[in-house]
Length: 221
Image (cartoon, helix red, strand yellow):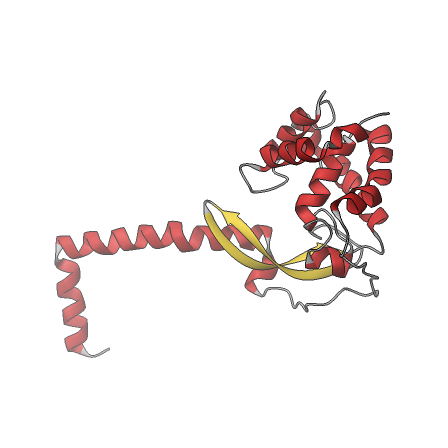
């Protein structure tokens, strides 16, 4: 290093105000940059390019469906599987329908049309077919767009069945009372508390959707 440059750096670091600014900048970078990176390193290694990815479906071709459905048609298509899940495992049909509508954009999202994934379930700890899609994540209040692996299905029925299996196989949903909820409103809040979505208004959105479309009529065993 050039001696003059080294001397200037040494002189700058000798100044208390300069050291304070450096420490302040370092702390800010730690919270604004390194913590979000560490978060996604653990939860989303694909984001950092650790795994080689392609924006295509995995090892088997996945049939997609047309998304030009009315809301009534959409709910009709999803309701049979939703009611079966409610009878078998206690996930309110109205909750399944509301989640499917919100997560899939009434069946029109790229994830749904390309991979029949109605619920936005990622493919971590998953041995089935996958697809890589861009998605927005909330990391400590910072919205970051990332590339993430999602589960891919042959049809919507598989997606509905796996939605219930996903909730059953992840202990945190039981721990937060998803399966002991007495009403769809309680179950919506339990899903939010368990971390199903990063949106802090997720439970309210589910309940509003259920009320708006009268989806509780499907909650009949």
